[in-house]
Amino acid sequence: MAEIIALGGGGFSMENSPVLDLYILSQARKAPPVVCFLPTASGDADSYVAKFYTAFSRLPCQPRHLSLFKTPPMDCERALLESNVIYVGGGNTKSMLALWREWEVDRLLRRAGEEGIILAGISAGAICWFEEGLTDSASKELSPLKCLGFLQGSCSPHFDGEAERRPSYLRLIAENTILPGYGIDDGCALHFSDGALKCAVASRPKAKAYRYRLEMKEVKEETIEPGYTSNENAT
Image (cartoon, rainbow, N blue to C red; front, side):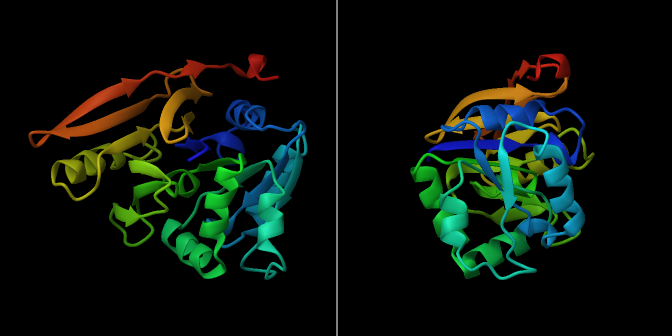
């Protein structure tokens, strides 16, 4: 399913480093790319949208956003399919997916990926592409959530940033409650090409990702070492 970049945490909303955002822009087929921000998971929070424009107006791109909450869109199809990058923000994944399905944004995102538009996102915008995601959107406790299914398996973001992420994810995999998949640290992103993991990139020296599988009721872990790019090299 085309090119998908899942950020465990970081990017413009969590750090000053533009490394991960610049990596996303570098994958677009057009320069400078049109980047459409989907802040749905935050309820289209004004402060989040403003932060996006502040960050991306300084980068080599043409930023815009699509609001589903505050101003009903006249043409979702045009806004999404005329972009080169679609960047999904964090927030409540369950509410985001419900609204996307109501507006048929899920269908448009699949089409966008098939047409070569880069699909990317952080937190809710990372797990949404997988079959399942580990989220606190539905309750106070971390639990599995059915997602879009563009990528096989499951995903947990903020793997090193929230104390309960790793133990909850491993326990649920061991219990066969969530599909095996990927844990992604803050400051790390996984790039998938046509459904297969292409590479990992990071904006922090210690950020990593992990791939999990279940064998004979035992959870097996594989560390995915990313290429690290410092701020000085982020040009």
